[in-house]
Figure 1 (cartoon, rainbow, N blue to C red):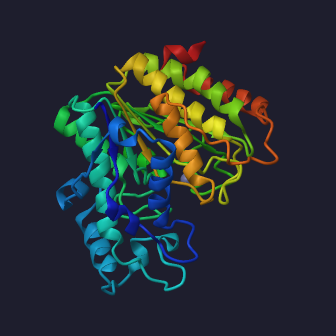
Figure 2: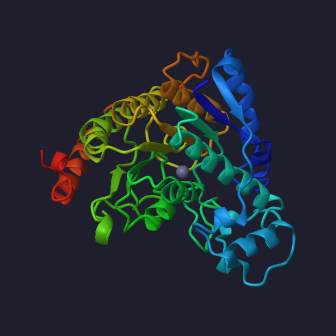
Length: 368
Ligand SMILES: [Zn+2]
C-alpha cells in the first residue's frame, strides 16, 4: 500500500474546551464519517500510528524555554507570565487556563507530520494523509491562532537536515495566512511557500500581503495569494493555473506538502471565503496532478482546520477524495445559497497581475 493514513488517537485531546471554535471531537467525528464514506479504507491505506515528537524534534523550530512552558502549563502547573508565551486564543475560554493534556496531543500531531514526511521522502510511502497536521500559526517561542507547535516547519526542517532535501514546495490552502511557516522560512530558498488566504486586512493574523515575497536568499520564495472576501471556486482555479502550476514546474520540488482544512468554505463560521465542496475536491485534485507531474506523486496532505462542525467532515473528505482521485458520495450535504463560482474573479485577476510584477525577477514563468 502506497498511501499512508496517519491518525494518532491522542490528537483527540487537542481541544481548547467548551465555547472555543477548536474542539478535539472533530477528529473522531471525521474518522468515523470517512470510514463510512470510504468503505475500502482498510485495504486502501496503510494506517500508521506515529510516535509523539521528542523535545529534540520540537527544538528544530521551538525554543526549549517555550517547550518547557507548554509542558508545565499543559500538566496544570501555574506558569508565571504565561501570556508571554501564548495568545489568549490558545486558552480555554471558560477556565481561562491552558488546556490540560494539550502538550501530548500537539506532540502526537508533530510526530505524525514529521513521520509522514520522512516516509514519503525516503520512498516507503508515495503519499500520506495526516489528520491533525497543519498548525501554521505557531512561532518558535509563541503559540497563537489555536496552534501550539508548528508541525509543518518542524517536519520540513527535519527533512532538510536528515534527508538533505533542497527543494520542498509548501502549499497552504487554509483560509488564514500561515504566518508561523512564512516567518520561519522567509530567508530560505529551499522552501517555496505558496499561501492562498483571505485578504489580510480582513482577517487574523493580518499578514500575507502580496508584496511579502521573502528576504535575502529567500527573496521570491514566499508567494502570498491574497483573496478578496467571498472569492470562490474560479478564483482558486485561476490561481492554480496562473501561479501554482507554473511555479511548481519551474521550482521542480522533490516533495510537496499541502495543508489546510475546511475553513475556506463559504459556510465556515470564522472566515469569509467562497469555496464549495467541489472547490475542495478541485484543490485536492490539483495538488495530486502537480505532484504527479513534478515529483513522482510524492506528497503529504495535512488536515485540521475548520469552524463549522457539521460541514467539516464533508470538506475534509472532498479534499482527500481529490488527492486520491476517488469518487465519494457527499450529495447529502445540501449547500444552500451557493455563491457564484466566479464571484470576485476579476479582483483575483488584478491581484495576480500585480503579484507577477513582483515575482518576475525571480521566476521566468512569472514574466508571462
Ligand atoms: Zn485557518
